[in-house]
Image (cartoon, rainbow, N blue to C red):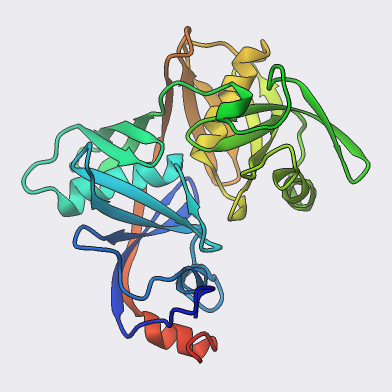
Length: 305
């Protein structure tokens, strides 16, 4: 059961497995309501890579109020996120190829808790959506908007955790990020990302980016995501890193900045006036299926009084 005492219900949930640059999700058509039994505990079990379906999160496609479509992001730990750059690309492809009646347009506005994001679709010769460019909107760089404690600029902020000093740059791209220009990856990124992301500097937590500059407008990036841990890719994290790089004179605005993540490259273009950030990358459907949530909960000992 979840932490409210709600039992997992007897229901089979239809899902579609997608990934955007290795960042993988269970995409669910939830236009007729939240799937019964999808409690935080059930979400954790579904995303478990050994005992469940496996994924970095679950994306619910609901009916919007300001747009026809609304994306709800459930992290692999059962919490909800405001925005997901790789996830919204998958959702746009899912809408175009599974939910749209008739021929889908090349641009689809998707509502999120962080606002409406316009998704522009690129199709291959067979008509299949191959890449999606997302208008992520203007970055937020005021401490109160991130949110981040303290005063002054959120850029080049010195913080020491567990005796290790870091200098980072806080940016909100629909969710909070702290970008550190050090080429840290693997287990070290997981260790320090976990500590930094829960530091008191960030009252709502933060996603942590470790970026190493490779060349002009080219970086290697590792992201520790709030609610997920280390991931193969993070679209909002890549966008926040591009904003921080431009703001620090490490990259140029107005043209694509390449971010090499473990799952592959993403390309981000920051407007000269910081009015918008365009994230472009692939979206791929892997397989579809259904899962008996009650049975899954029962096998993991979650369905008990």
